Every structure is written in structure tokens, then in C-alpha cells.
Image (cartoon, rainbow, N blue to C red):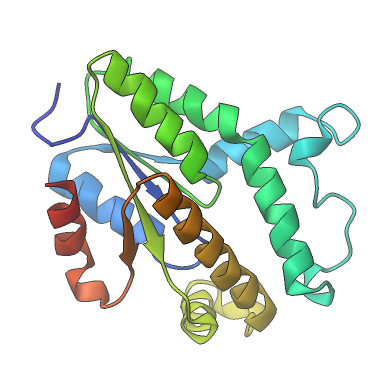
Amino acid sequence: MTGTSWDILLIGGASGIGKSRLAARLAVEHAAFVVEFDDVVSAVEAMTTAEHHPAVHHFDGLPDTSRLPVDEVLDLQIATARALEPAVMGVVRNRLTVDAPAVIEGDYLTPAAVARSIDESAASGRRVRAVFLHEDDPDRITANYGRREPAAGPQHHRARVSAAYSHWLADQAARHGLPVIECRPWDSLTGRVARVLG
């Protein structure tokens, strides 16, 4: 189908660690489309209500999440990600109908959904690969948010949630036999991803 070692590459990881930048680089290198799963999440949220689909509306009506304990926000984020697993698989199935490579990236790509997508696609002779990026330093993530969203000011609490979520994703990825790659050093990230993908 493509000149790459994959038809679809899934890039998972927590917020603020460089998934979008990596996806954009790889898309240019491989003439691939980029699908931001966050757009799908927004569409699902817009088309559903907390009454009819509470699993994807855990954050509706909550006060400022920075006032909640990190573990509580993390639990809500994990629950939301798990509820969105069928959407991940639907996006992968749809992209495999197109004769062009695609990079799908997003916070809510769970290792469980990614592993199922890989297995399902392999059974039909298609090549879906994945990597999960990992960043365990909240200060580094805070700095990343600062560059990306300077008007928001320092987002320390959000960064702590992101680092905790990154640990959860890395642990789950390892359980499913999926590669986990440290974000730093950034300059060598693309090369390290290429080596993992073969």
C-alpha cells in the first residue's frame, strides 16, 4: 500500500509531550495524512450528552479541575479514554480503506484499543504500527504548555496530571507489548521512532 513499514502509525501519549509535532514531521517524511484523534473526541462529545452517553462526559459540569486531586483527574481521564476505545478502532478501520499512509495521534489512544487495532488489521494483511511517547517530568510538560499556550500562564497541576497519565499509558503499553519511547532528547526522537519501527 505505501513505501513505509506501516499503512497506519498510531502515536499515543499524554498531553503536552510532543505527539503533534512528531506526527507532523513523520507525515512530511512519508507523505502521510495526519489524523488528530482529539478532533474525533470533540465530535463525539458534541453529538452526545451526559444523560445519554455519560462515559464520554466525565468532565462535564466539573469545577476547575486544577482544584481536584491529581489522582481524581487522572481516574476521570482514564475512564474517558477507555470509553473512547471503539472510536479509535473505527478511525483505524476507516483509514485503512484509503490507499495512503496515515499518522493518527492523540491523548485518548489507549494501548488496549491500539493493540486490538493492530491484531485486527494484521488478520486482514494490513500494517498498523504504534509507538507511545513518554515524559515523566511535570516541569518539562509545564514548560511545553508555556510555549504552546503562553496566555494560560503556568499550568503546573495540568502538567502533573499529564505526567501521571504518561506513566499509566507507558505501563499499559508495556503490558500489551507496544513500544514506549522517551520524548527526550527531542532532536533524536524521529530517528529513535524510525529504529523502533524498523
